[in-house]
Image 1 (cartoon, rainbow, N blue to C red):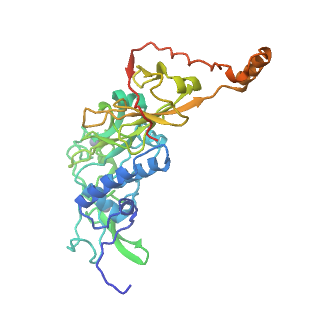
Image 2 (image 1 turned 180 degrees about the horizontal axis):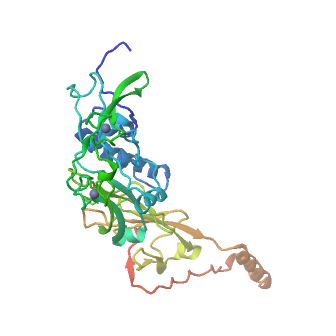
Length: 416
Ligand SMILES: [Zn+2]
Ligand SMILES: [Zn+2]
């Protein structure tokens, strides 16, 4: 290195790299980068990797846009403080999440313990110990069918969360008992330990005192609150309700402010639902066109040449979509793509919908059909085969549906 620059030293740069911003990027820069990246990596069927990348970008933004979480990430990386217990960064799966929700502890991200380095840090001020300004957030992945994305869905769920113990009002001690200062950390709640911060860098890191769990105060066993056993919080089951609006995007987050875990003296954390679209057997998201869906439809050769008027598919809300393609209007070639305007998913924040992209598969008659033509020629051997009129297999039968049928226009020309 021949060029000395003072840089902010962080434990891990993955999130910054994902958004392609520098480690000292401003909040505005991070937001701008996130928007750009989210557009670039919007999930689509041509690129199965996109879904994963899109979620990682969301995770990175979630962390870096929250000052507390960003500070924790900068000093400890995506897994949070060494004490562990949180569910950390990406890579969570539903089993873990539900284990956390209904089983034992309620995980969360955040924390907000700061580490101390000589110089380096943005402000360059002296050592300061910042307490978390609110409780841990809880992220819950929520899978939703495309039918529900189309119509919107009200979700009702029972979950378990930490609430301030009503027995001791969050002190953890029996009434009349004052917690004592912790001897291990002399009441500071943190201890200094050596830690490998980056290749070649060893720093003194402030970490929560294991003896008092970062509280700075301890209560003797027999003086602990009976209800919470000194934990200050108790588990509470709560029925929560929230609305997934029509058109909610894959990877979108819905935050229920203050519905997460409570900790003494700070506002409760949030519950954040991470919406994930389930794959649909017929409809796929159409890349680069918000709200648009693609579907593969099979028609017969006679229909491609002579037109048709029938229900081509059943929409996500159960309506039959009938298309008339008149004789002489168009010849639909195999793999050509036509558009039905304004029949895709609702686009959030607008009254518009995306489009439906129909890719046509054209079924040719089979060999039995050709053989039967040959047989007919033999039977009518007297007549010239050049003048024979051939009859193609007819149109496909209409789909049987219970719901409403609507007629929609197909674009006159294919887009490919
Ligand atoms: Zn208690
Ligand atoms: Zn202590």
